[in-house]
Image (tube, rainbow, N blue to C red; front, side, top):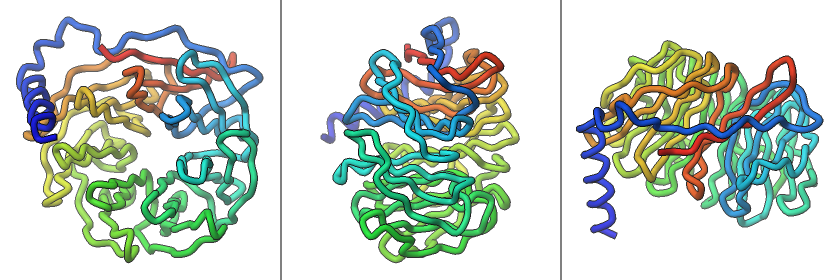
Length: 326
């Protein structure tokens, strides 16, 4: 394991120190967009189910969780949920957990039958969510509220509420350090939460990124990546909480995706750009951007195929599109 770590680290250092290597190379190569059948409206968060090789798309405009085959982008099913915002996978239970905003609930879906099997009521609209498999708990952000709910899908209830500053955005869980990270739009911070006690242990600034939306983590460098509405992708050292640099990105980013293979961060911008940055122990280096459809503000990474997916809608319908990593 040590030799693999050293090789990965050396590769990351080399790429970051020589960004000109990529100056004339297409970093992402686009497949043709795929129109989603029987569908209208835009999307929120995208996730992958690596075990079943599926793309999970929260189709907010269609009031459904859309499930696609990652191999060819074929739609497997629209699952009615209400206004779906985000989804998490409970591998052990064999379920998808969908946070729903307007209807204020979590919908539990059988991942094999692709059918909703029960609901868990919330006290407000859900936004981003993440599942902690160690404790079998789901963290659900109260959309533009002041709560982070801890939901027990097995007990079918909200088991705890964490008081936070207003307007949580993305929440993620790191198994290696056993921490939950939550960024906050209103005060441009990211919280480090202990899942054993549900206590906020640290509060760190995301400056120079303001109005942070996208959030991702690299366990190799202990870097938290926070994409701000102001066009900055900031790095927070998850050991010290200090700023570890930043790069410029397009404005309008909602979700970002981390590619552990290439040590890259992909930021999806609704104005038609995917911005790409290279991580290393010393910080981020911008590798440039590629064009993508307008409205594609969420993104996910498929490690098996080494590709990223975006989703968007226009007057003609709803679409998904794959970009292969070069």
